[in-house]
Amino acid sequence: MLITEYIPFIRSQFQSIKEEYKMDWDTDSNQYIITLSNEKVLIKFFTEIREEDIGITLRNKKINEFYYDFPSLKGFDNFNEGLTDIEISEVETFTDDIKATVFLFRTFFEKYCQDMLSGDFSQVGPGLPN
Image (cartoon, rainbow, N blue to C red; front, side):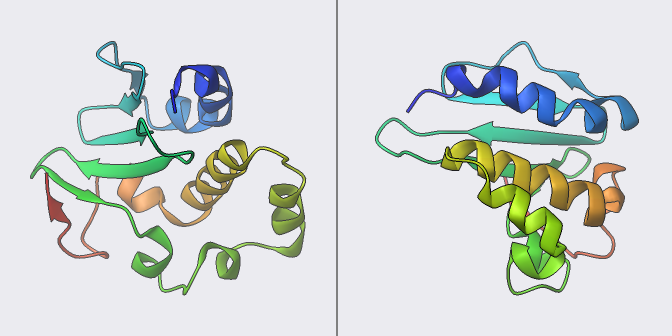
């Protein structure tokens, strides 16, 4: 699946994060990857040729390690544990699973990942090597 059809939606959902953390959309994105980064962190949105879903990772650029299981890093069993009933119902309004996932990640990042988005990974431990 190509990510290109979702780029406008991804950009609109992550606009506030882009502005708050002084990030830019990287120009080296392609049909399957789009990235948002600053000097400390990189958010990677990616799809794969034969898959119908989206992956989102956050990389600590300082030591080149990445993170992906955000609920468990923040002490939750799943995303829904960290969301209010209103936020969960908003996720459920999306008929497109990719858009629902992007919305879910953005909401979770804004609520629980400010430290990581600021480049502070001390509370979550080491990531995976890139």
